[in-house]
Image 1 (cartoon, rainbow, N blue to C red):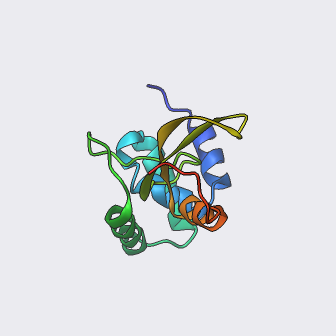
Image 2 (spheres, rainbow, N blue to C red):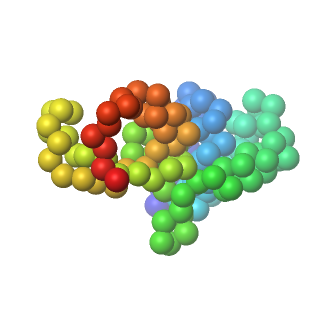
Amino acid sequence: MNVDQKTIVERTQASDTEELLDRVTVFREDMEPEAIRIIEAELSRRGFTDDAILAHAKNRCESNIVGDDGSALRCTSCDRPAIVEDRDWFRVFGKLPIFPRSVRYCELHSRERHESRPDDDDGVT
């Protein structure tokens, strides 16, 4: 597979630091070697040492959910690593519950979901 370096560099420079840390640690197996080198160079430019990257990897690996193949699973709502799996309703137009489904949330979306969930929740258990 050909890697378009210019596009990778532009996207890397535009990405937030946490996303880059996740890509170079948690999702490393899914990445091309050249992309890893570009991201590591960008993190270094932003002042991150190898020790800081390893600390991020250790923190993420202790909390993220992995699939049957051992790869990290992503949040249902974004590309961050999932830390919690739950059941929820698939809703038509975001309103009408049709059937239960499995969902995964990162730290951010798990917290948002918990805070926005009403006490008389109609969630699936």
